[in-house]
Image 1: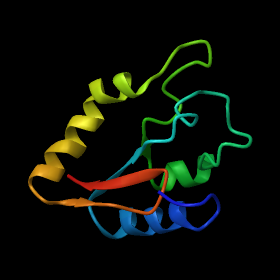
Image 2: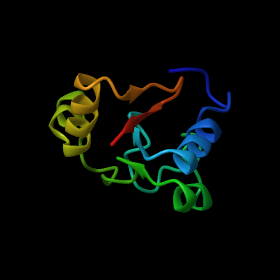
Image 3: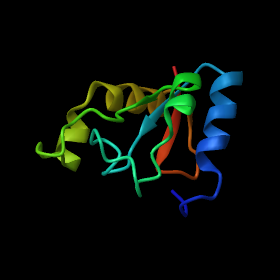
Amino acid sequence: MGPTASGKTGMAVELVQRFPFAIINVDSVQVYRGMDIGTGKPDKATLSRAPHRLIDIKDPSEAYSASDFRKMPSRRLVMYSLWVKHLYWLVAPCFISKY
């Protein structure tokens, strides 16, 4: 975790291009479609170079909670990676997991 606009996404994109990582979003607002302004959500060009999981998965009219995040399949991948000690944290509203 870290401050907005401190280079976290850029670092994540560089790492994903070098290593077999997945970027998994943990920002509570970036999960919503259409909420692109003021959220720090990566632009389409960045997402095409380095896909982020759990971005634009819900409509703003749908609820999303920490409990929902716990149930997501991508989270299971991250937790598995943590157990086998291959989880790499970025100081970001997204984290990277080796898969």
